[in-house]
Length: 397
Figure (tube, rainbow, N blue to C red):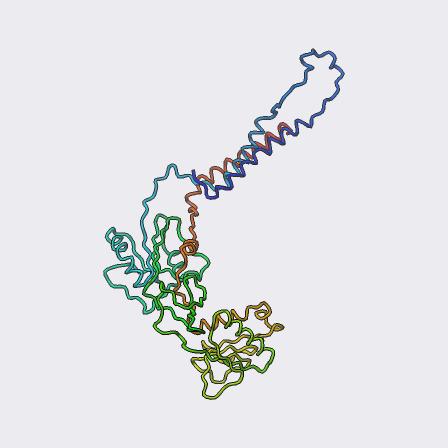
C-alpha cells in the first residue's frame, strides 16, 4: 500500500490520547464510605494495585478512530489487485536544429522502436518522414513548453524531454512534469557569439557564465565572443538636465559605475557640436531621437516610442526616487546600458542545479487509483464512529 501524503501517518501517534484520558479518569476515583464494610472479609477489603482497564472495547474503538483518521488523511493507494500498466516512452523535442542534431542518435533509436516523438510546438507535430520546417531563429518559450507537456497524456508514459539549456527557461518559476520524467539538455554551441565592451586600460566588459557582469583584462577563453567589441573607445554621454540637483545625482551614479566596471565614459553637461552621443540622460522628452543613442528620460510622461527611449515618471533625486535613496541608481543605469549594447544575453546556460530544480515532478495519482480504498476506509470510519457513540452512551463513559 502506498500513500500520497505519508508524513500525515505521524498523526496515528495521537492514539495515546484516549489511553491517557482513560487512566486519568480512573485516577480521579474517590472511595465512598459504606456502613456494611465491616462485614466484608479481609480479602475483599484489599486495595487493587497496578493499572486496570475498564470499558476496553470502548477504548479500542476510540484508538482505532484516530488511527483510521490518520490513514484517511494520508490518502492510501491500493494497487494489489491491479495489473501494472505498460509504460510507453514519449519523446518531446524542442523544435531546434541544434537540439535535434545533438540527440540524433537517441531520436533515431526511439523512431526504430516505434516510440512517440513529438515536437514541442503549438500543434504537437510528430516526427515523420517529412522534414520539419524550423523557424529562422528558434527560441525556447517555457510557457509553450509547459503547454505542450500539459497536452500530452502521460498517465502511463515516461516523458523524455530534449531542450537547449539557456536563461530563457527561468522565465517561469517552475515547469511541472510527470513523475516518470527524464531530462536531456544541451548547451547550444552554435548560438550567437557574446558581445563585449572595451573599457579603460583595455579591460573587457561582458556577461560571464554565471550571468554576472564581469570586467577583466582578458576575455574568457571558454566563451565564444564577437570578433569586435560592441563599442570601441570612449562612450560619449550627455547630461541634459534643467534640475541641477538631478544632474549632480546622475553624475555621481555614473562616476560610481565607472569606478566599479572601468567604463570609459566621456560626460558632457552641454551638447557639443559635431559630437554623436551614445547615451543621453535628460529630464526633457527628445524631439527626434537618434537610432543609435540610448535615452533615459526622467520625470516626463512618455511621448516618444522607441526601444532606445526609456521613460521613468520619477525625478532621479533622493527625495523623489526610491531607486536613488536606496543606492540602486548606478546598478540600474548600468543594466540599461548593458541592454542597449546587448551584453545581457539570454543564451547563457543555467547551472545543472538550477536546471534540475526548475522541473517539478507532479506525482499525484488519479482519482481512480484512490477511489476504492478511500471509500471503503471512509465507510469503516463512519461505522466505527457509530459503534463508539453507542458504547459511550450505553456505559455512560
